[in-house]
Every structure is written in structure tokens, then in C-alpha cells.
Amino acid sequence: MLDPVDGTNNYALGFPICAISLALLYQGRPVYGFIYDHSTASLYEGGPAHQLLRNQQKIQRDATAAQAQTMVGAHFPMQLELQAKLAPLLAKYRIRSFGSAALSATYVATGYLTGAIDYRVKLWDIAAAYALCAAAGLGWTFVAGSPFPVSSFHPHQGNCPYYVGTPALIEEFRVLLAG
Image 1: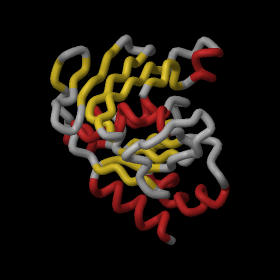
Image 2: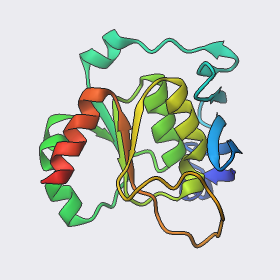
Image 3: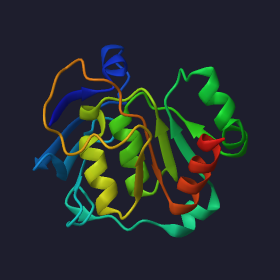
């Protein structure tokens, strides 16, 4: 599954936060992903049964850095109802919005972000990052049920809202979204 420019609006404006995202699917599930980060000229790759790599070097998730400061990736604009549910989280943590769902989830896989949430994302935006997060051993929750295995594809498919992150942050998302 290929997304040739994730962060299209950024790219069109000359803002370098965009990515090329390619996921290898087996029986409709992401088994390996590649994400090229245009802003850093870095190629990330990995999958559930593979290591997470940046420019062919193994990435060590730094637990110390993650404990020092929690940063969460989120997509804006966000519906007011969702903002209300997430208000405690939005007030507690530093929030980052990159304009690229692929990069936001990739930064969770690398440990730069503690977690991410996105309700306005398409399957092709996150399939490769899903594999990268699996390589990092991170939990991924689809709010409306998993789109995997993929059995068909259409460019007008609906969104597949999700959240991903450390176990503690996944639990915070779950509790806040249930309320």
C-alpha cells in the first residue's frame, strides 16, 4: 500500500514535514513498512517480526527520554466532542500536530512521541507506520474496529480513527474516550 506524499498540504506549501509511506501487506495485514521522512532525509523501516531501523541502523527506544516529557501527536482540526473528551490529556501533555499521519505514528515508534491519536486518517496514511509501531512493540487501537485484513481498496474509503503509544498512554486514551 503506497502513499506517495503523506502531508500533501505541507508539501504543496513547501513545508518539509511530509513523507513517502509504503507498506507491504501479507494476507491483507501490514508485515513491513517503509517511511521516508522528507524533513530529515531519514528512511524508517520495520515490521512485526523485524527490527525498527532508521537509515539501516537499529533504533533503541530511549525510556529515559520518554519519561522526561510526554508528547502526543494529534491531528487538528478536531471535532469539539472529541476535544472535550480529551481535554484532560490536552491540558496535561505537550501536543504536536505535524500534518502527516505517517510521520506522527513513526515518531511514536521511534520514541520521539509517547503516543498519537488521529480521527481523520485514511488506511494508506498509516499502514506502514502500523508495521513500524509493531516492530517497536507498541499497542495500536482502532476506535471503530481494525481495517485489517484489507480485502478491497477504494480511494473514497472512510477514515480509520486510532490511537497508539506506550501502555500507560493507551490506557489514558481508552479511559478518556470511554467517558
